[in-house]
Length: 84
Image (cartoon, rainbow, N blue to C red):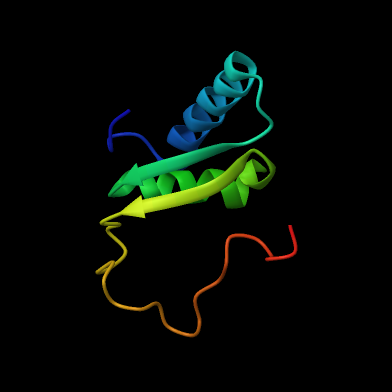
């Protein structure tokens, strides 16, 4: 995967990899740890390609969307509700 491809295409590749891991390890959900642009791609997968049921946790390291040490503003949107 490279940044030469659009985010939806890369997120589709993430979806395929997640499905393969679910089958291989016989688990309903996986955790994703993503660095930089990978965090944006994983978040796109979760929010737009129905990945929220397949991903238990998303951990992003140094996302290009901002400094990870600065608290998110009040306008930040959770990936999913806390009731799950």
